[in-house]
Length: 102
Image 1 (tube, rainbow, N blue to C red):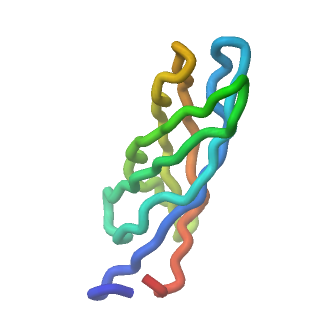
Image 2: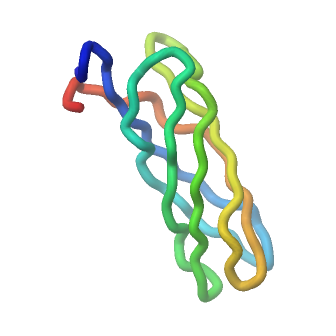
């Protein structure tokens, strides 16, 4: 806990859209944020190396979706341009991870 608010993060992983004859994988951990109503997380990283290149990605999740005393987030975004094309990505995070460590 930090100032009476539980800090937490989420994991995510997925595949980008199929563009220019290939797709990329991505995975990571969101930013660590307060578990307050309507909160969001930042997520950023680099895709897998496919077809001779990678893409950067950076987005903000949607607000928390609560279920069974936990929550998750939906997300969507667009990668950076590489090799004259982009990819789209979307999905949902894991449920929240919080152990009062943050």
